[in-house]
Image (cartoon, helix red, strand yellow):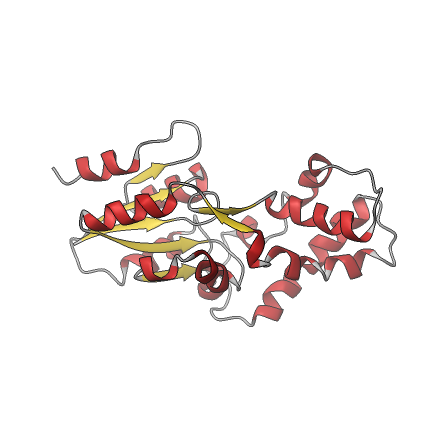
Length: 222
């Protein structure tokens, strides 16, 4: 059996501006004339998310409120660093969840569905492995991706963040022995090196040295 393990964010779909863009959206709606740019925000979000501590395994099936609660201090600190008054920063931090998970802000890359469907026609089965928020299933449903995947492994649910080996082992455990498996993602560290450390060949896409997915996975079958 042939399987492709896909990353989601930055590989198949995206939210414009990602996390920094989300905070910028909130600033623009709540504090017009703030004068900050997305480049001002990015440095304040480079640590503090669960995937930045990928060496730790969290309990599986944590309540969504608990997951987001763990990020509240990060968002508050970022808003404070951007000049938001101390009395306002926690309130703006509480708006991040709704803004980030607004499904209307999420998009698929132009070639996502055509590539998935072409590979399915060639006999490949798709599994999603993503470091993401608890609301990922709602985003996937909105984008029409749900029917194209056999299983979805979301770190907010499993507690395992890529590139931790357990994130990949959990996916391999649902496959039959000897299956032909490739990982596809946009992060050299989380997707490519993480997969290879678990014995899974990997393809980097939408980044430097990216490969052609169909050509490579078809070549693997010859």
